[in-house]
Image (cartoon, rainbow, N blue to C red; front, side, top):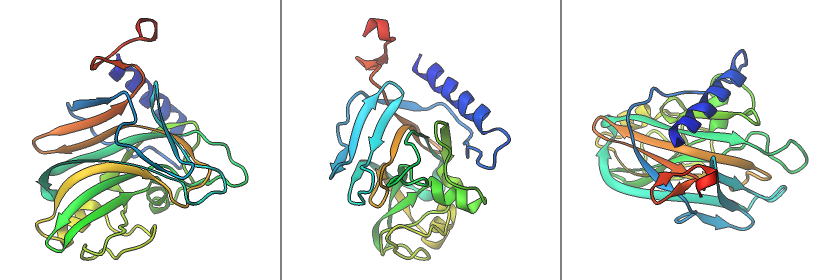
Length: 237
């Protein structure tokens, strides 16, 4: 049932985006181990940032006109070679309304945690920079959109990556493959997401966070519908 609902949202997104300059950057999917989250365990909030599990994902918010709010989540795993990575994607819905103190461009970012000979680092994918790279505008509101992280340019807040200088929030310049090529032996040690700072007034749902290598695929899903490890329809919860 959970997967059927997700498929329905994906169809809605594809229909809404048809004929626009802002297509979803969809990845080709494979069978995946689903990690079900029914709570915000592990999510960190700063300032007025919030995280709430809803039926269709994890709802993240920041306060209008406030730049200090932040919401983050991270999970770690046994290091895997960057060259084995085949799919990195997630889905978002931008639900805020345009107005004073609200960022039209901001959405939660996908974080990849990597390790090189120089040390640990974080790679950040933001839909805004992907859309800039294809000549599109700000993300559409009210549309569930899938983002292929491997397509997009990345930035880093770290100083340990060759070819990708540390920045405070962009610009994003290299793809994951380009970063891996510039840093032989790079491994991926975890994934996560982040909203903020300097992303005021954002309301967005995040879900279906995938990471796949040649051998293994894992997808993190959030929903109030998860009970005892399974999806339960509303009338049975």
